[in-house]
Length: 358
Image 1 (cartoon, rainbow, N blue to C red):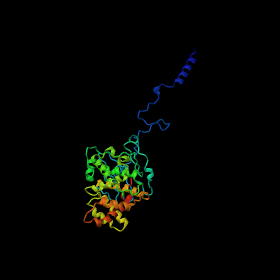
Image 2: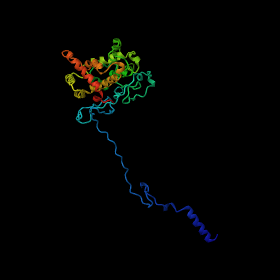
Image 3: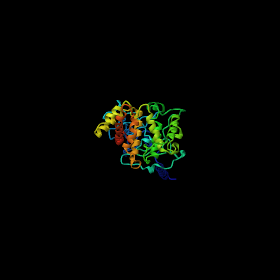
Image 4: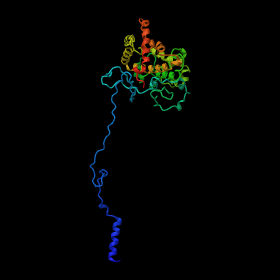
């Protein structure tokens, strides 16, 4: 081969294969991607941290306000935050009262939305068809039979009736006693459309049987009131069971300590002053009393939402629950009776201003 031809062939092969790998610049493993054609690399910069949303400590909402519950992981249920008529938190650290995760009975419909009793009478679902145990009622909805009740610590004998709310909470770890929970759930599911609910008397024999079962073991599956067979298909016996629990409390739900203050507040002629006075006293109740009262009042408000069917408006319910929740002093029972009714009637008419609706 001619030398010139060999040289040309060698040059062609060199152009086809390119320069040796070592001729390419080797960027640092930590170098940033190129941003221009100049071949230079911008200095490495740490990634920009997006600011995280910080949840501020909960303080109670003011009148007409809402506060979302937060659920804490604890062996005991914590208590729901309280709405306040004051501009300063009730607790000195500004963190609010211990929180209570949303419980099924605590979900209530906002004003203007009435539940239909026909929607609450679907067939009972057996246990294997129910949702998971962490199911919760969505705010603004009526209870569902699929929601799993809170679990109390099992025991062979744990009396419920005649035991103080503070002792029940200390022992069972439930913000609202199981018997109250189950009774409210049963009435929400099966009693909102029953005429005269809470006014009608149930079977004393059935009430005593259920009472004995709760005193023996309130976590007994036979006391799951999503199944009407467990209360003999008699919702009036359930209401009697709930009223009996309130009457048997060693100290009334609204407490003897605050009895006189409630009576004085009820005598206020101005509706707003009376409401705000009662609101302030309710916020001063012990935590177990406040949590149970809140659950009961939101439930009774749902009863009044269906008063066009069940004939039980706020005044009719107040006649029943006034003396039951406030207790009675024999020396002033007659004089205080009307004001006790006024207390409960006012609370029921202002449920969403006094308690958080969700």
